[in-house]
Image (cartoon, rainbow, N blue to C red; front, side, top):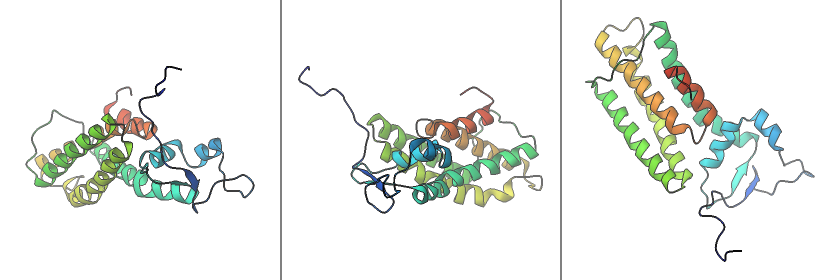
Length: 203
């Protein structure tokens, strides 16, 4: 009516297709009703599938596809979170004021955390959820596979170096608390669960 576009930005992708790359139809059983998908797949998994989609390509949707997304990202992150909270609860650890860690592995993952936050922020400022989600997906395996796996002997009742144990717990807490806030626009339910449990604060 005003002879100009009625919107400033559009978030989308080429076309939503079935897992086999064909249009979804009720007649051939390839369409999935939203409420059923939300119940069986989970809305956070669906949101992440959409957010991480390259907008230049077709989005393939189905139970196998979303299971892969859940297994390679959501479960990876949740297991990292669970590792931390189990050990922290076992030792009744509480977060303290940040102290500069002397451990090079902690320094590295905190530097990676800063890099990730910058990339996600730059992406979302440009309405580019694809680049933001990609930055998070690249970060989580670094945290889980490298930082946590190589620090298992630094935490728990059997860890001998008390100060280093505190640095390790504080680093894990900082990473997870920051990551939960970065994830809020993408996966609000899982992010909210992690954040409120870690901090004891409201969302």
